[in-house]
Image (cartoon, rainbow, N blue to C red; front, side, top):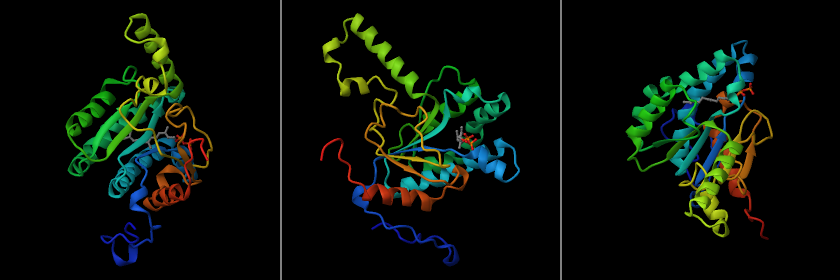
Length: 254
Ligand code: FPP
């Protein structure tokens, strides 16, 4: 069983975390970090204050995942549909990597975390891409947790791009149409070198997938909480994994 008490916390701060089976930790956890805007509104703050608070919450959950031995943590930071938000909000979100990485990269690197990005690089402002690319470059040889930011990501666009590439490869004689199967198709997804998520967490009480990893989530266990992302704690994370460990994954079998 893994650390029911975090020994580095002060006596008064100790929280009891649900015991977990170290043999059954999900390899890939994906998170839809939802509810930043409502968190802010509840406090009479502008929506962007919620995004800022949400950004501040990322590292804590990365460290919790790393401590548990999760191999990949994908965080949905910006969807291809989020461009439709007011310009000020989009601009603010696009500046978050510039704030996040200088603040956190030393600790992430020291903990052997490898930063990656899944999404369309085209369309992202140069300053955003530069910040993300710098972190990817700096941590590319790390062998610990893969921290994968889904940025400018949309599941349907990903599938369509994959299908177009398949058609092109068939036309070019690289691939035979008859050879297209699930494993081959997965190689045309942006996550071609990652395992599919075992567990999806969505905060804020919304019970939707919202165009996130549509192909990859086929057999993923889903876990929802009403709490908003900025108030999502390590305890929630452990609860989600404890619940995952109680589920029987059957993949359509019996
Ligand atoms: C959804 O909440 C959240 C987002 C669109 C942005 C999530 C981004 C972060 C938490 C920061 C990411 C950090 C880095 C380093 C890139 P919402 O705005 O839809 O909330 P609402 O449904 O309450 O309005």
